[in-house]
Image (cartoon, rainbow, N blue to C red; front, side, top):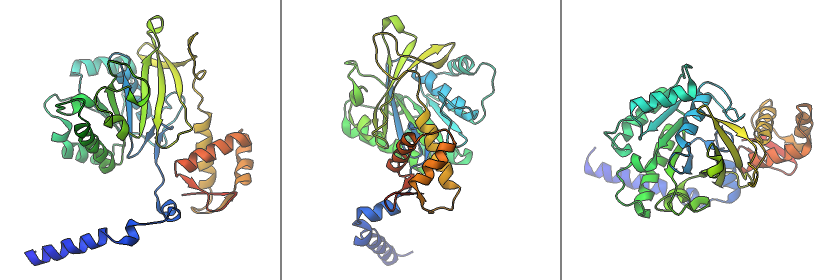
Length: 336
């Protein structure tokens, strides 16, 4: 291709990208054209989305990640929530040598062999240095869940408090998630000030701002060092999901527990809404894609499956917000 052809091709591409019909659209059109979110696990993991898990060193973040990923790779529900599809995981354990990886996996899985659970723990490269190799590997193995533990060691960070640098790092993680079509868990350490909400993580706030979901892992107190509180401080896909769960560490695994006396939160883990949402999707999938069903018809089907109208309405509203189903006219719903 000569220089004139290159200029012409560049001009045509710019004209295509700057087409006003593509740049400026009505909300109605965007809602019709938008692809549905693809959940992987409950309201916590979505494909092409970044879930930031922030907590104190030693709180159990890595163990939580191993147990979550391993359970889903084995086809088992975790915290009573099943994955939406078979899981294949790459765990980038950037703080652990082979001996620690082996020890931790034995503690969590005992002698159970976990298929499709891959680990990268080389200290020789940062994520941006092996980016394309990692992308190619994930595509070849059909990886749909990636854990990066942790954000600081994944990059050659010069200034933890530099928002511009943090934004560039998050852009690489976002590109990784998009190119592989995977959900990404990004582990991060808590701040010294131990601030609440999305400001809990150390350094620049751009990390929390550019993550899709933020989960805080807090040790309850000195009296309950074996209990962590799992708090969702941000969820771009479902602002109604106010998670505040308590998990107790027993023999290397986390099990559900009630809030200790003097604390507040949900008793055990309420997974009804996730199961109800899956049932609604199954009901809509029984018809052809795009077929409209009256909401009351969905309620009738859900009643046969043990869910009342209020639970069905909650599930439908959650699925609409996640763009997995839509309502082209009042009183009707359809799968995207």
